Length: 196
Image 1 (tube, one colour):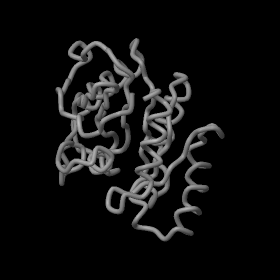
Image 2 (cartoon, rainbow, N blue to C red; image 1 turned 30 degrees about the vertical axis):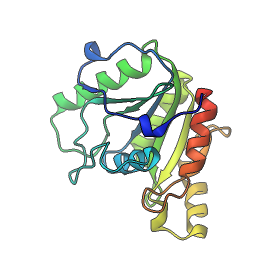
Image 3 (cartoon, rainbow, N blue to C red; image 1 turned 135 degrees about the vertical axis):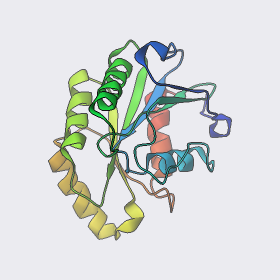
Image 4 (cartoon, rainbow, N blue to C red; image 1 turned 90 degrees about the vertical axis):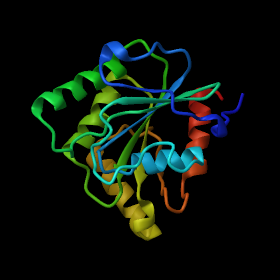
């Protein structure tokens, strides 16, 4: 049964491991730095404006947010590495992320977002290594592709893949929430990962 993106709705936000709802469907989660354009990309993927809240201030997503459909649950994870918050708050995020990724859930695909314009941060490298270490299926999606020419995009993808030390069989896409570049490919990847 194909994913009906028109059905996507916001179901809830959860700030502690104990609050996370039980897994009932394949889950497609989105992880990335706080200023990577995650909310904009998810809205473009869903074909909806403003469903996933876009903040002018990076690091506002501090909860795990669920967006279900009949066949798949989409999960917006807290951004990492940018927001000016306390060490205690960073530790809470870390525990929340660990609880989500390491619990018994149907992780169909983790979409790991990286800004194509910049070198990979140590936290980006750490996230790729973490997902690979857990054996979770993931794809790397380079965001904000509209900011670079096509030839520059290709150069950056090659360079970033080396920096991220991603396994060779990792799916890699370039996307733009502005132009829609790569969105259909991302939908195809999600469909293949979830069997939807």
